Length: 147
Image (cartoon, rainbow, N blue to C red; front, side, top):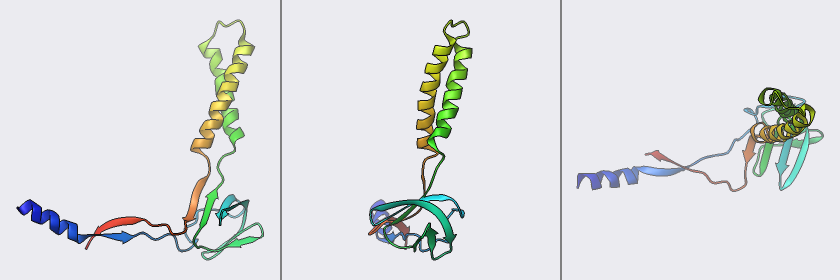
């Protein structure tokens, strides 16, 4: 009986509380001259940050203010960066994995190509775009807290 009373009391004291989106750009982690991707109203734009304040972000010639349906992403590392690293690792690894191979050039080229594909994929998944601001329209998040 005590357990039931305790569970009922806890159920009545735990209430949902709304989580609010960011209200300004004061915590935005972006530098002037950095490339960002801005999505608002279903339209995506790629540009360079020219001005930044707590109330406005200027990308190229357009100015954005915090509000619903605004998403800002920071550009990640270019895919060719990962492809070059992967190709180098793949081509170099064949020297150590197949030291007595007669066709070193062909094996290194194939391994370099495979390494380039893997490197580009890793770069895309690990260092791709990073969301730095997002205020989705009608976004509802529910958290629980004690009264």
